[in-house]
Each structure stands twice: as C-alpha cells, then as structure tokens.
Length: 432
Image (tube, rainbow, N blue to C red; front, side):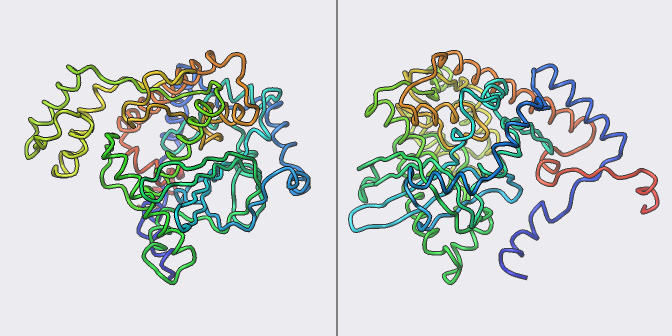
C-alpha cells in the first residue's frame, strides 16, 4: 500500500458510508424540502440553465486553443491543487518560485466568468442562489455541477482557462512588491488531497516535495505574521496542508481587493467584518478567563484578538470549543459591501474581499467580473445585500439540519465525512 493510500485508509472515508433505513431517508428528504422552502433555497436547476451549462462544456479543447494567444501561457509552470478527498471540483491551484530577492506566488482560479456572465442564464441563477449550501451529506450548488466539475475544474493534465493572481513578495517582510492579475491557460500537474500534501512534505523523494516545502515555509511565515499583526486565529492546530491553502488564498484575496481599491479605483464586493464593542470583548475575555485551567497572558489584554490567540495556544484541549464559542457569541456578522469602510476585524485587514471561490460564492464571481471588465455591475449594492442575506440563510439552514440529524440519532460530522447509504430493512435484518 502506498503512503498516500495508507493515509486515506485511516480517515473517515475509509470507514464507509453511514447506513440508514429507507424510512429514515424519507424523513431526511422531507426535512430538507421543508428547510429549502423556509429559506427559499432552490434545489433544482431550471432546464434553461442546465441546457446552457451543457452547451458550454462542448468543444472545450477547441475553445481553449482559440483562447491561448489572448492569454498568458502558463502551461509549463509547475502547478497543483490541494483539496479535501471528497472535493468534486478544484477551483484553485498554486505555483511557487524562490528567486534571489523575492518569492513569486501564483494563485490560479478557474476562470468561471468566461462561461458565466451577466447575459447568461447561469449568472441569473447564481444571483438567485448566491452561494453553494453545504448540508451534511447533501450539497445545493450555486452553479450547475456539469460546468463546475468539468471546464471550471482545474483537473490534472488538462488545459484549463484560469484567472491568475501573480504576487511578487519581498523576502524580508513578505509585502507585495508587485501584483499582476490576468487571464491565463494552465495545466495542473497533480491533484493532491490534504493528507497526500502532508505526506509530500515528509518525503524528500516524493514529487512536488520541494514545491510544497517551499510554499509551506512561506505560508507559515505569513501565518505567524498575521497573528503578530493581530489577526484572530481560532483554530491554532491546523495542519500544514490547510495552512498552505488558507494563507495563499488570503494573500490572493487581499492582493485583488487592494489592486481594485488603490491601483484601479473601482468599487468591488468587499467583505466587511465589524468589531464587537469594548464591553462585548470584555465579556468574552472574562468568560474565557473563568474557564478551568485557562489563563489569558497579562501582556495581551490590550488587544482582545491577540489575547484569544495566545490563550488558545496554551489552553487545555477540552476548553478550546468553549473559548471559540465565547468569541463567536460576541462577533457581529460579516457582510458584503461596496465600500471596505471598517475593514475586516477578525482578520485585521483594512481592505478585504473574496476572489478565490467563484464556483461556490457570488461575491467571488462578481469580483472576477469587476477585475476583468474594470467596471462594476450597476446593481452592485443590491448584489452585496443579496449575497449577505443568502449566506445567513444558508448558515441557518445548515444549523437546523444538523440539529435534526442529531434528533433522529445521526452524527452530523459522520454523515458529512462519510455520506449515507440507504439499506433495505429486510436485507439489514438478515445481516444482523
């Protein structure tokens, strides 16, 4: 058994799906339908949208060949994706180089707006849905899977159209020396799962070992730098592969919105996260300080975010959930706005917006369009409000569905990680 295969064998996926009866499956179907009605979530795509998506997946190679002369040709650049084992589409890939006085980090995002634009039925449907909704064992996509899982998925050894964010980073401070955002053609060398990426970091003879090691060193420094600057890190024990992806995506998102704001002077769909009031922060810190075995380091009280980071690193594992919950309770909701005023409190970024997930978030799709057109949709404020409201609906729907799963005796995390399989009751009885 290879190291990669062994890594997957011990995971939840290796245990097989959660088995449920036909009766319980009907209950789950009914509950989902009830929640979709309550939160106005569309489960089925209109046929016009599906037909359009299907048509856009024909003659893919010919279309890409026609586009190559108009784009940056990055097919020879070493590029790879890293995603969960059960990911159905791969919308972001990375490349890295270390040069004498700089790092060059490329984040390639599937060029969804090449296929989905304001004149298309898919765009209209994406605005209607505003995001992909993830329920344990069930996904309601923002874009038709036939599109998202084919031409917009950066699969290995296939040419794909991408929107690339090329960042030249100063070696000492990791600041942006230069940012370029352009349309490209890429060819991913490999699709890694998170556990495979961890293995590659440990095995000096494995393909992509050097690239993963280099990008992890960079991501780790970016992560530490964020924490020092006062960015809230609620999950201190994240593994190396997740750190790589999270930090590279944050760096790209920030680069795009900074470019739009400062270099181009055009509006964008910003992610704004207001801060809790001083009293709310005090209340959260007091609640944390009162937990058994937990102590907030004295020199961090002045900046609540740094106080929480430092406490999470030292606190006993059994208290992590309670510390995180104390913080989440006082945090206002983040929202989408056409003005970055107020910045993103949790990340401690003055300007921030989304760009790296246009398959599953309307905000990213809109920002791709703005970058490409250097102009904004007329109804940008309306789109911001729509995306904020639908995200709230999606989160509430997910919360209520998880609660229902627990009520009927199912573990939401197991269902999420392993999926479900409906077994015939009479067959199930025979095996007992």
